[in-house]
Structures are given as C-alpha cells and as structure tokens.
View 1 (cartoon, rainbow, N blue to C red):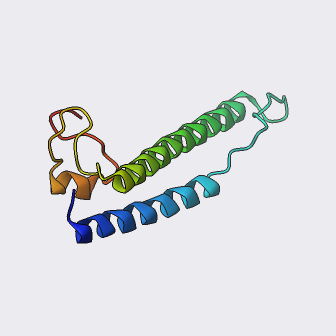
View 2 (view 1 turned 90 degrees about the vertical axis):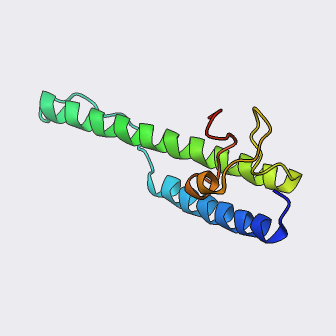
Amino acid sequence: MSDQPAISEAQRILKELEAEISERINANKVSTESPQMNSAVGRLTYIDAYQQEQMSLHARRQLQTRLLSIREAQQRVNQGTYGICMKCGIAILPERLEYMPETPFCTNCG
C-alpha cells in the first residue's frame, strides 16, 4: 500500500481499534480468585460461577489476540508492507481490509 492518504487512514483505523480493544480488555477484568465449592452456595451455583469465569477468560484471550494482530498490522504500516499478503505477496482487497483491518493475508491465503 503506497497511497499516502490510504496509509494515513489505515493508521487512524488501527489506532482506533487498538484503543477500543484495550478499553474492552480493561473492562473485562477477570477475578484472580476461582469460584470455590461451598455447601452454602450449592453445586449448580458453583458450576454457573465457574462457567462464567471461563467464558470471561476466553473472551479476554480473544481480545488480547486481536490486540496483538492490530499492533502487528501497525508495524506493517510503518514498514510499508500493510495491505500485502504475507504468504503470497499479492495486494489484499480493500474490502477485506475494511472488514478486517488487521489481517495479514488475502482471501486465498487466510
């Protein structure tokens, strides 16, 4: 991607995404204390609490993975390789970059 306005727009979009995902990660604070089985609480309540904890952990991991992808895309912008497939080297369709700005691959490779 060599078009300066397009590069500036990609940087802006990636920066906004990074801020949004970082905010969502911070909002999704996971308790460091796992639910404990307690006779007063009951088995079903424990199972529900455990399931909620695991779902929250999974969501946090997904957000962290996406944040890493966004930061890698920002590096590709700085290196001048943003918008070029990392596998085959062809240009990634603008529609794909609009839908998933952090993608390193074209539709054939990714």
